[in-house]
Amino acid sequence: MADRRPRKPAKQAAAESGRTPVAKAAAKPAAAPAADDAAAGKPLRAKSPAAVGIPTDAQGKPDLAAVRAQIDGIDREIQTLIAERALWAHQVGKAKGKLAAAVDYYRPEREAQVLRRVVDRNEGPLSDEVLVRLYREIMSACLAQQEPLRIGYLGPEGTFSQQAVYKHFGHSAMALPLATVEEVFDDVAAGHADFGVVPVENSGTGTIQSTLDLFLTSPLMICGEVELRVNQYLLSRTGHIEDIERVYSHALSLAQCKSWLRQHLPKVEKHAVVSNAEGARRARNADDAAAIAGENAGHAYGLKVVAGPIQDRADNTTRFLVIGRASFPSSGHDRTSLLVFIRDQPGALYRILEPLARREISMNRIESRPAHGKLWQYAFFIDVAGHAEESPLKDALAEIDRYAGDVRVLGSYPVAVP
Image 1 (cartoon, rainbow, N blue to C red):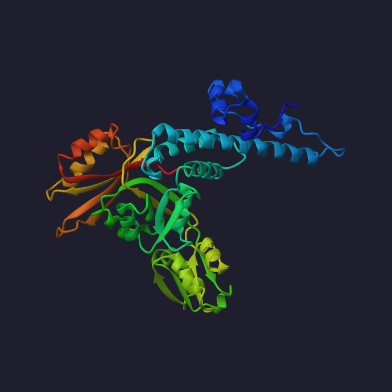
Image 2 (cartoon, one colour; image 1 turned 120 degrees about the vertical axis):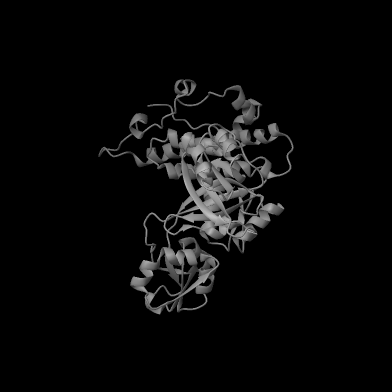
């Protein structure tokens, strides 16, 4: 049977060797199972129970005690490796020198590269999404050794925006609930929050124009994106649909569930509020009230699930943007958001888009919004593939700048990892 003896905990190993775990790892970086594969740059493969040779009982079933002992040994290995990773992450902080705050240690392009490698290596049985979530939490905890990141979001507790914060930054980040999306922009701009997470579009109801309008005057940059699968639930204090006379929710959530509401609750009053969680807070105060929100909001405000998911589209997904005060280098697979003010002349929009088409740069989205302070003048929000500091997009932007009244790069950021 292959040797599966657990490694010694990091502190114990350090005490016996007279070296810190970091020094030990540095002295022998390739010390790992399947070292030949590691040296060749190949992904290490998980050992299946069949490969390890689990003992069986008289009936030929795996011996439960042996299986549990194997799991305990693997758990010790995992814990030791996580501790070693945290120590190495701390060395990154030392290598960068004394910086002003946690935000100075955060590198979204590096995190995206790490997570993509996790997906590339994955051969099951866990899904890509599960592994990405696990690694995100490990990276979040390692980064928080310096200081937790402060992330503003549309509150209160229990909103989908809060879920997007934790999906992108992990639970070691400090989530700061704010009353409006505008306050999220203001707090990040003022330095009260390191980053903000704001909703920008939904797969069913389209663009959230109030968020786009804030970019017209904000100096902030887009640093990342989050795609969150959204499941809407009908929640109430009693849990009985026959008690419900009014429903509270964000206007977009009401729109995402309009067919279900028309079929099952055609006569109830519908009240749009600032967020789903605010709707849940109101619904907890009366037996005849309900809210449409996520399950997290139900847990936060003591509501029962009446029905769900009730959204009209099974693939209901909301895209969020991460906003910050600085831009970041390329991750190798990026998207760039542009804000373009065009001159009022024939063919102006064509002259903006043609340099992109000629260079075969994919355009993901284009939308016009009234330009502030200029009657009947419009700005175009355009999402394209690539990083603004790399060709061919860099060359296209230089050409576009000759024809546009003004071109702003709102941000180049890693494409969302599942």
